[in-house]
Amino acid sequence: MSASPIKVPDVVTGRLPQFVRILNQLKQILAINNNWSVLLLGVGRLGRAIFSYPGFTPDRFHIVAAADSNPTIIGQTIEGLVINDPNTMSTLVRDHSIDISIVAVPIQRTQSVIDELLEYGIKAILHYACITLHVPSEFRILTQYYRYNL
Picture 1 (cartoon, rainbow, N blue to C red):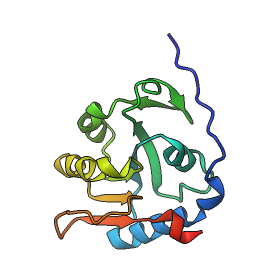
Picture 2: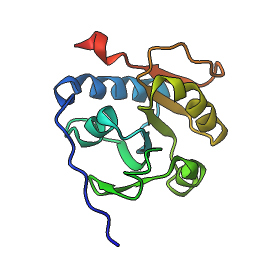
Picture 3: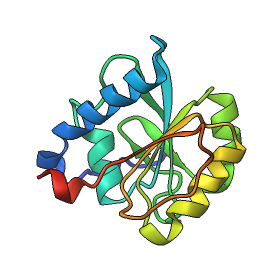
């Protein structure tokens, strides 16, 4: 059975230009001119807006995999990528050589998702939760409070 594409609502796309700026900051922090494979976790309204925003992917940053815990969208296709079950994160990270993750999950799940990503060798994370996260000092994390950047 073929997965049907999900229409992406134009809910927050007007607020997304700052994401390009944040990714460029991340590029500076990493100080390496590589192409980066990115895993998007959370494909709700914010995740879909990130996924579909045309200016989101500056050169060298490419969303190559996406996952969401909502069973109604697992297996569906958005922007040409199949939405995976988050239980497959370790496989996604390994198979796609992912170094960076964008975390757009509910605030209650952010820390546990980031803990899991650390176990899989993710080197940097961009997230949107208004909380203090506990990560090792050598780990790179950028917090984007999109409500404050309007």
